[in-house]
Amino acid sequence: MGALYYWGQKSPVNLLNERIGKAQFWFLFLGTQVFTFPMYVLGLWGMPRRVGIYPNHPGWQDLNDVATVGAIMIGISSALFLVNIMYSWKKYPAGDNPWTGTRSSGSRPLPRRITTSTVCPRFARSVRRGTTTTPDTRPPRTDTPPNR
Image 1: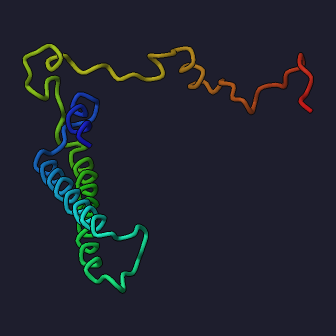
Image 2: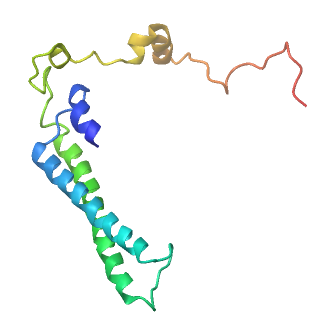
């Protein structure tokens, strides 16, 4: 997620909303701490793994509930990230220098979008005409014996 916030600005995608991004970061950071710390403590107390009910140790259930809250916070963080992508899809164009950097890497213009017609123009023309040959439509080879 962090790479998309930083380098996604130089891709053909638009800038992401910073306010939603900060909320998403804090939900992810705090949710990770709230999720992992109770699990660490429960491991020190001797809780076995993959157990659903704790009849002899009711204190374990409370810490597992706290860890569940942390997992829900991580889920909210992921949902905020998706909301940020959808919200920012058309609203914030990146421009040539989204970080307002003075070095050459920040001030370099965005690369041209690579399409099939720029990579292989002959193939692109055949696709437009509908004359491409797929593996299902090729004539059978006659120079080799069939597999047995």
